Image (tube, rainbow, N blue to C red; front, side, top):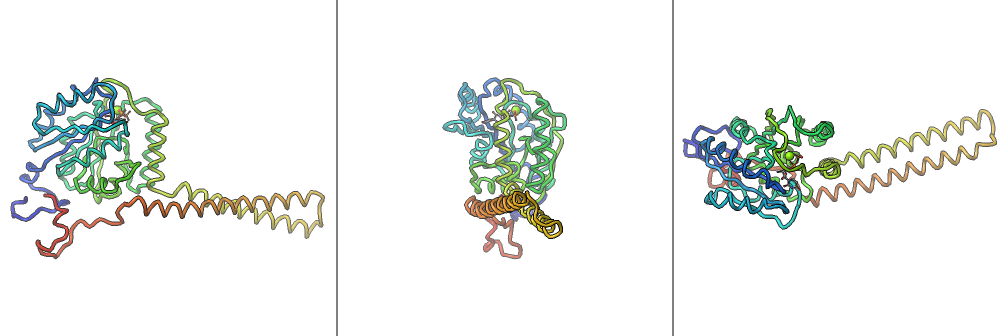
Amino acid sequence: MSPSGKIAPIFGTPTTADRASRLVSVVIPVYNESANLRALWSRLKPVLEGTGRPWEVILIDDGSRDDSLEILRTIAEGEAGRVRIVELARNFGQHSAILAGFRQVRGEVVVTLDADLQNPPEEIPRLLEAIDAGNDVVGGWREDRHDESWRRHASHLHNRLTSLVVGVPMHDYGCMLRAYRRAITDTVVECDEKAAFIPALANSFARRVTEIRVAHSARAGGESKYNLLRLATLSLNLITGFSFLPIQLVSLTGIAIFILSLVFALVLFAHRIIYGPQQEGAMWTLFALLFMLVGTLFLGLALQGEYTGRIYMEVRHRPTYIVRKIHGAGDDGDPAADETRD
Ligand code: UDP
Ligand code: MG
């Protein structure tokens, strides 16, 4: 509550009292990270205590096959409800695990973090400051990245592509050291997408997004869970989840083939008028017809794709718009009051 006694708007700049009372929820997906969990907790807890704010940590065991779950339960035991473990039935992937965590959060600000200590927990206070400054989403930007070089190159391409399809340019969409206002994570949860790419989805619902440079380390222990195939699947989720670009490229190819074949047919016709019938003329005419047919097929395919895409847009139930607040309505009749969480 703000000093005036009125409910503070979710997207306004908070006062010092607001800040101190805001529960921070930290969400961490865990898959076979037994080598890192104790070190993670010994660094994360002092950082959270140091913020002076109430906090909770939600760790999602994403079907680990090592003893991650046992370690997590031991950590939670000593924390009297401040640490909760969500145990998934099997491995569903990092983004699905984070979504499972988002469903459980009670805080006003939600921070995500990897469990392998590649994202230093010590950066969390800076993320919180950026949220306090009025941003809805704060992304970490790993300028000096400690990953293999093929990952860095793939990531560069991925960031360009994501910025293009989402329409919110960012240097580092892959960094999971991020902070979100609760309204944003709730909307992401409501979408209930089967193949969500969280940073992109969250950005598409945010008004103010910023990026801050964060440190990055090599993995403390264990190995990366991402191979080329998993990364490619993630990129494909992203492109198909945000744009019809692939199918539109098919349309453009179809149109180009069709136009070229028309030009080709006209040239053949002019040739026949000027030079009379040629021996190999029939073959070229067949070619022109074939190209026209191929162009028409491409166009038909693309048209089907456009309809399928529109059906897909309907079934995935992403909100068309989100009302943040209705101004000028009394407190009692304010339909947005439920959405106002300060
Ligand atoms: N992770 C997960 N489920 C998976 C893959 C990864 O929960 O199927 C977690 C993993 O334990 C780590 C984070 O997601 O906390 C990032 O994974 P990783 O370090 O393997 O990715 P990279 O840093 O190589 O991109
Ligand atoms: Mg990692």
